[in-house]
Length: 79
Image (cartoon, rainbow, N blue to C red):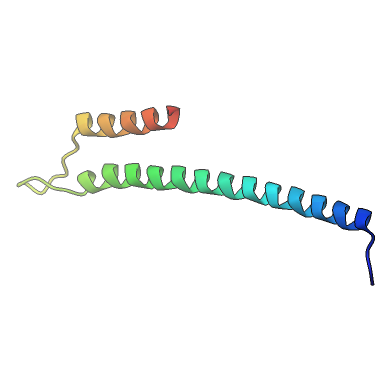
């Protein structure tokens, strides 16, 4: 089966459009993956200190550290 030059050019254009679309989707996926990783870091930073206990066995929560972590994450979202 031999295709005409016009058919081949149309096929190449269609494939180029498909590749462009796939590249855009990969870029979107990478951005989402990066945001998820950053969010996971924030959650980890918030939960690990919450699991620590003082000498009496009671959990201590450093509100300033919590606010700093959340603020840093919000700032990163803006950039």
